[in-house]
Amino acid sequence: MSFDYDKVLNQIYELAEDDYKCFHSSLVPGNDNIAGVRIPKLRQLAKEIANAQDWREFLQCESHGVYEEEMLKGLVIGMAKCGIDERLALVRNFVPHIDNWAVCDIFTGGLKAFRKSRELILPYIEECILSDEEFTVRFAVCMLMDYFVDEEFIDYTLTKIAGITHNGYYVMMARAWALSVCFIKQREKTLELIKSMKLDKNTQNKTIQKCRESLRVSDEDKKLLLKFKIA
Image (cartoon, rainbow, N blue to C red):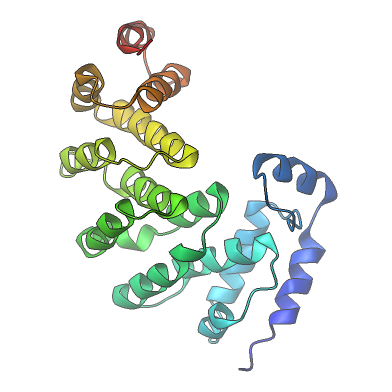
């Protein structure tokens, strides 16, 4: 393998900022090897790698345990020029390595190539929803939130999110976040779900909290949603 992986590692540390390392480390507990590179700089580095002919070799290189390595690989998967089937295979290979919310959320946000081929990734999303792995389930929820909240898919998305039984904290937070986005974009159908009280207490109440924190939700709706909090 000819890819100069050490060069990438050196670039990561050159771009790192001590202040940002301290700040970001507080947001992603349990990750002790954060170098401290801001996301815009990582995106620029990922773009350079994705535009190189040997980007596939980069993805195959063994990581050295630095947090930004996985973030970078996830970004490259989203940016690389390849067919949708190959990208899906790369996604399938990457998701099991996700071990924190930040890599998960940045990764899903970068998979815009699936917007034109959403049906191709749905079977994998359904697999992930049934996983026992917390961040695999979160990946599925974030994908639904990012790409399946339009009129065509809102019923599907609400049903899938409501039916999740994994009780991990980061799954619950993702469900609540996703449902608040659904409320903003598809108010009536999401309100029906909230009114039904079918969600577990934590998800129901956190969804309402996130809706009430949003500047895109009216004061009237914020008052209305309080009626459906579970004591």
